[in-house]
Amino acid sequence: MFGSVTEWFYRWLGGIRPDPENPGFLSFILAPSTPAGLEYANCSYHSPFGKIVSNWERLASGNYRYEITVPEGSLANVSLPVAQSQTIEITGKQELVDPDKIEGLHTGRFNLPEGDYFVTISQNL
Image (tube, rainbow, N blue to C red; front, side, top):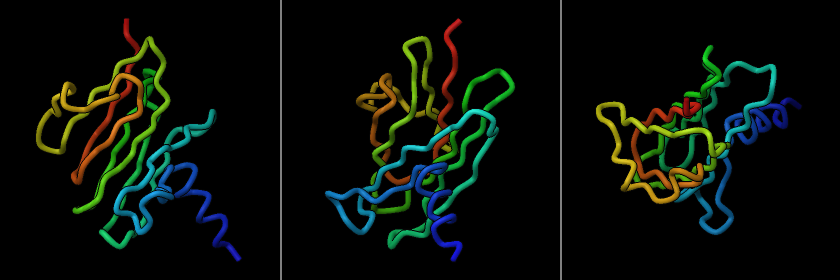
């Protein structure tokens, strides 16, 4: 009875959705929603390749921080809401990710290979 509620959390708040062109989560869509009035969401989904994590929080500064885990052997097609006045920084759990190696980063639509990441969207001042 509560299955549809659970699905809403990971599919819309967490944004974890299957890629219709690559069934089985070989690649998947990661497009979290950040509705007004909600300060954070923690979502995970156990795919055939492993645990997918899509956590986000609205920081006191108005910026957003996303925590993403892409399981081994899969690819995330990430789509984040980014305005022209904002910048994106991606950090692996251990190191800064070279933004020049991620095509489409400035638009908020990019791919992430397997790994653990922190993505911060900040206002340019």
